[in-house]
Structures are given as structure tokens and as C-alpha cells.
Length: 216
Image 1 (cartoon, rainbow, N blue to C red):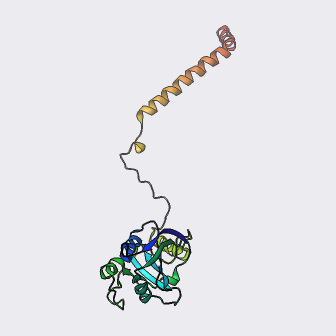
Image 2 (cartoon, helix red, strand yellow):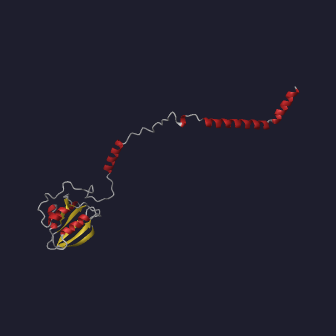
Image 3 (cartoon, rainbow, N blue to C red):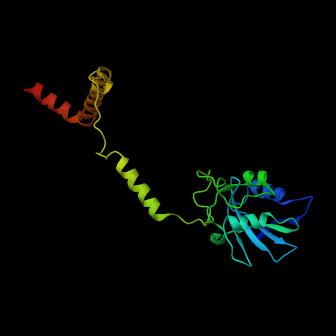
């Protein structure tokens, strides 16, 4: 785990300030607060989620977990701390889905209640769908196929291209008289040119035929 911030817990900088710092971190989905007590062997970690929630904790030397671990660690008044980025490591051992708003605990310090009753948010504003699994770039295959199936059922059936209906007054349905006149004039020009060309090619035969015709 990478250390983001570290420092000492003193009368000047108490646990309340450290909690606010953890709640305000936006660049890490699940920051971890590590606390060591200078007056005892107490040491442990508290897990946070974006949105300013504490989701769990664990004490290293006793194995205590949940709210009891959170309460003992937050009562430390002389010690040191470090805020960690778990990167891609799982944080399941410090996640008990407590969903306790940091602001609620800060307002009660140092007189934290012995139980979490009334502190746990029944409807937490979860920013991430899963806060215990860091983003790995993997795709939820089952979810993707399910979504595709829903989209296929919702999509209209492709019956091929729709027939094109042309209005009776459409230009494509009218007889183009102008185009016909141009075409007819072209035919006349071609016929005249053919006659002239034929006359030039067979002029001698035509003259001989005419002479023979007039002799008889």
C-alpha cells in the first residue's frame, strides 16, 4: 500500500482532524487509516469509502473487528497515523459494511457510544457499485450478456427495407416532354447525317444509275 499522508495524533491534531482528512480524499476510492497508540500495543486499520463513510476496521494484535475496533482506535489521543492507498489489493478484512458517516462520529468524539446503534446509515449514498473490489478493467461478462439480451428483446424486428411509395404527382412519375423533344431532335440529326454520309459514299453509283435510267 502507498502512503498518502502520515503524521502524529496529539492534543493539537486529534483524531477528529484525521477523520475529516480521510473523508475528504477524492482521489482514492477506499482509503485506509492506520493508527498506532504510543501508550499501548494497540494498532489497527480503519477503512473508508468515498462519500465520507467508515465501512469497517480491524485491530492487528487482538483481531477485533467492526464497530468495537473503530471505537478503540478512535479513542487514541497519543500516537501516529498513516493514510494508505490500497491500490488493487482487497480490503475485505477491514470491511464489515458498517456505513457509518464520519460526521456523526466526529460530533460525538471523544465520547463514542459503546454500540453502533443509531450510527449506521440504512441507506448509504454509495458512489461505487462495489467498494471492496478496486477497478481492474475487467468486464462483468454475465452482466454484459444480460444487458445485450434485454436490448435485443427491446429492439424492433428488422423486416428489411421499407417499400418506397412515390406520390402520383412526383416528378419521377410524370412524362418529361422536354426530355422527349431533345431525344427526338437528336434522332433527326443522326438520320440526316447518315443520309449525307451515304450520299458521299455511293455518289458514283447513284449518278450511273440515274444516267442509265434516263437513257431508257
